[in-house]
Length: 372
Figure (cartoon, one colour):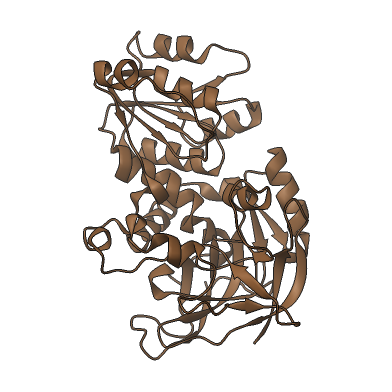
């Protein structure tokens, strides 16, 4: 079928809206009409060449939409279901069976191989050039062929234009706290970086009962929003010594938990140095190599370095949980969003990179309206 998609034809290039051919679904696949898609830093990581992918490629991995067709072997989904699209997983390896689908044995192939297992493409140009699929969906498009494991059904009263980022950015941020760090009520936490991932982590920390939730950033307007969403304290690291400020806030002990969402080595270093004895840090951003003294930084302080790919989440559980928190007024993620029409994708990318917008969301289906 013919679809429209934002194609990246080369590194550092603008997105180009093109007509592509999307292959027919197979028996174990689902066709989703994309209503909207969030833009995530991981999309730009590919665009800037920090990871290698075959070009041309259609990016996008925070899609939401309505199921159009299901393969005959698919159970639990039917046309008309409203869904959020997240990562794909096999469902039967040891990690999947023990509730850790983000550690799936087949993770890389399902999400980043870009083609089917028989090497046929999902997407092609009119001249037959194959186009690489991204993160199991390529949601910068009007339709996507996905695995059922990528889908989470949501109530039709939920605004599909908002919830696509639940599939990655907000899932990663909140899940890192809920599933990775698991802070106890009354504990303290510092969140470095107040973008979408950081603010989701911060809101999760507030829900978890942390009594001191410290947001660290270099942008005052983001720190103001962090206060509005639940930060008990904010620190502008341009104007203050972060370690000194956090030690003062915690009576010289340091925080029990910290999350780095920046990937900046000096900031990652700070996220370790501000930990109390026995504290845990979760670095979730793509960072360059850096030196860590395992003895001094961790062993002698009884500290923990926690990995939490995709927030160690089961999307079908965590996405519904975030929806419930939002309905209860505890997860105000909608305050981070700005909508753009699909043809404004390059403007959205620019405003995201500049820090002007925290969570750009592209609207592919402008006729959509949530049900009352």
